[in-house]
Image 1 (tube, rainbow, N blue to C red):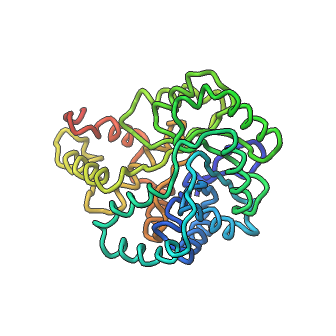
Image 2 (spheres, rainbow, N blue to C red):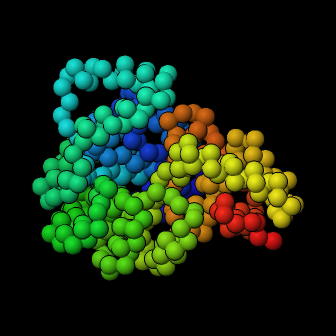
Length: 330
């Protein structure tokens, strides 16, 4: 597992981050602790959670797991989406809901709608910042977090000077080591162009097709910012589109022979190998957060970043030809 320096003299962070959004939501406590332990044993030490994840209970499980490990991990959480207090009977039903989702995948969209009803979004105020961070620290069983992200931040957060100053004071006080935003790419672009110096970590959905955004990241590198990409595979639809395009490239005579012979689309490892290495290779992105709640996903992602069948030049060629609207370049 490769590790990179993110923040000062703290521990180096694994280039693969463990996203904790499913903990105590789609996945229960026991399975979550097993997944966290397996990832940590494999060298993953960047854990990304949020006050709202798992109906407000993800941080509790993460805190339980981190006991005795905190000084060897890099921990990020978020504020700005507030979980609504659940009645005891609703919490008791969660194992039943998880069983339904596991056995009836089509029920997931219904469950997602119900989950959104349990959250209050865009709660980005100074009072919420204080209360949310205090609650996060209590549940995580720590006195600081390495990165505190503003969750689903709108562009307007950049003009909330009092809030930004509060975040800066929290850095000075040692409660957080770095402040940042977790948002869409247009908000991250606006933050990079704004000239502000307080939000130094940026989390956003990965997109290999947005060359202008990737240029902005590369341009910002001398400022020693932290860039974290999430949702690298784009869900089931994204995976399906990517496999279809790779099949086209594998069958095209315009694809260089050395690439075509290794584009074995039936190989389950081909997608994580291409996507994760493209995201991390010379992009300025230091950490990528794929799904790793299942052991098979963890192993595939670990293998992908530890070895790759394609050279950097071949990966660049594949990236330039992933668009389904163009014929392969010679």
